[in-house]
Amino acid sequence: MTCAGRVLNRFSKDIGFMDDILPYHFLEMFAILTRSVAIMLVACVANYWLFIPATVIAMVQFTFRWFFLHTSRNIKRLEALARSPLYSHISSTIQGLSTIRAYKEEEKFSNNLYYYLNEHTKAWYMYISISRWFGMRVDLITATFLATVVLSAVPLADSLDPGLVGLSLAYIITLADLFQYCVRISAEVESLLVSVERVMAYGQLESEAELETIPHDKAPPLQWPDKGVIELHNTKFKYAIDYPYVLKSISFRIESCEKVGIVGRTGAGKSSLLSALFRLAEPEGVFEIDGIQITDIGLHDLRKKMSIIPQDPVLFSGTVRYNLDPFNELEDHQVWDALEEVQLKEVISNLENGLESHMSEGGSNFSVGQRQLMCLARALLRRNKILVIDEATANVDLITDGIIQEMIRKKFNHCTILTIAHRLETIKDSDRVLVLSSGKVIEFDTPFNLLQKQQSVFHSMVKRTGPVESEKLKEIATKKHNYRCK
Image (cartoon, rainbow, N blue to C red):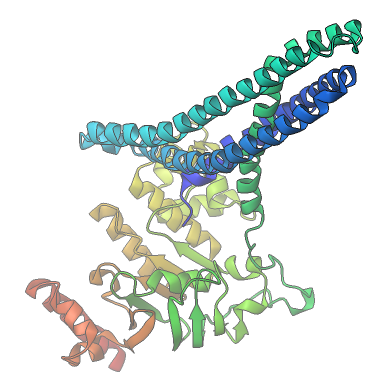
């Protein structure tokens, strides 16, 4: 996952270098280089013997320049890398400022900030130091050339034109500072090209698949999916070409309107299964929804047909209505009805502009529970056949938890529901449980049947919740089994 600091670094500092500093330095380098070459030519025309020391000095100059560039480019990369964690830390600190103050962790975060500042300052100070090192040597070489011009004019005074010699000396004196600046700024231009290299690296990242189905006549029907049957056969998934597989030849079938809980240890592949479902990277093998291979259709045609209630509620800067109905497809009364279902109607009504009230970035002007209920209202309005829940109640209070669980049971009864569970109580009334381990399907059956098997992984997971909780889960599973049998 790309941290916010890297993205901010690319689109602030690196783009700033490209737009503001690099063009100015390049034009200045070209102008000064032209002037320096002209001054050296005037000196060589006045005394053609100076072509020899000028050639030697130029070779020495370019040797120092190559050595400086070879080092400065790498230090520039280190400086850019050290800048990303600093931006990321500042961004995350500002977002969680209230939590930091609540837990009195100001000193810890201040120390972390000083650490990142020191790491960045080390690289930046090193870059300034080698620039001064290079400048001293350029000055020394320029002074050597100036001394050569002056001393060579003494033994050749009878054969040289005094006017040309005086003109060349007058120009070369100005070359002392000019030539050093010319070589340094040319090296700076090449160092700044590191920013171009970093931005171009982002531009060359592999993009997602086509947003729309091509050709258009192969687009899925408007009512697709009307059943919500999900089937996988020998499906593999990895996040990048050179990454290992995180899902390894998994096969299972989820029936229409079935409620499936997905469990497993950290790194088992639970979130990767959802990533494959939404095609955050392209899955391999058979991955079908209602008989249509998801990799054969456009991303818009796929993703807008599924709803998700994430663990961390995702809200955008804009109006309340924009967050609930971003494509402006619904009437106001439908939006109000959804808010009333999730018990947010009174909260939104009390705002100054109602549905047009502004919501800050990330919904920070609402509580975590209210943000999660907003995501639930959004899912209600979409009325999709497939609902994905990524432990939606992990970060909310018990009252909000009860609202969400009750709403899911009542309003999404006609949906196929996939629930990633970090707590087993979340999937207590699921029709079946999918147990993953190391990217493979270990078990897939009803909770009751899995609990009857003493050696099953799910049975051991339930047992670890403690005697009280495990008995409660077994009782719920038994009731669910008996109800299905009837």
